[in-house]
Length: 116
Image 1 (tube, helix red, strand yellow):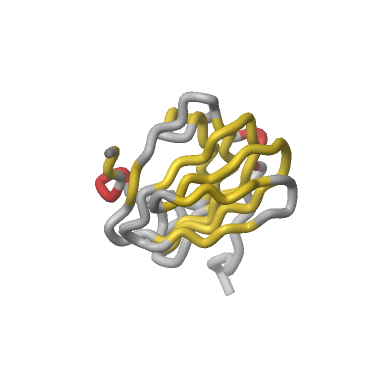
Image 2 (cartoon, rainbow, N blue to C red):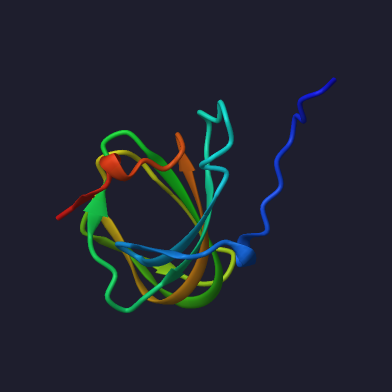
């Protein structure tokens, strides 16, 4: 067997990039053939912007901080170990100083991100 069947990412070593929620460290987007999911370590900023995706489902897992998620007009309280699945078309934004793991499925595609 010459090709590895696993990939490893050190999330805190990945350079963050701006996103509507704040800053995201995106892992596994460059793995050849990956059509399943990516993993993002995201730091939510106070000025996160409402957005939605037409194709992608996201799972948020709160690691640190407290706040709430606005999802289709509802406020969902967030605290460590809260997890929320956000389906395509759901207008959402996180509010508060939070650190989350975000699991986008299929892998994150910037063309599938629409601000409101």
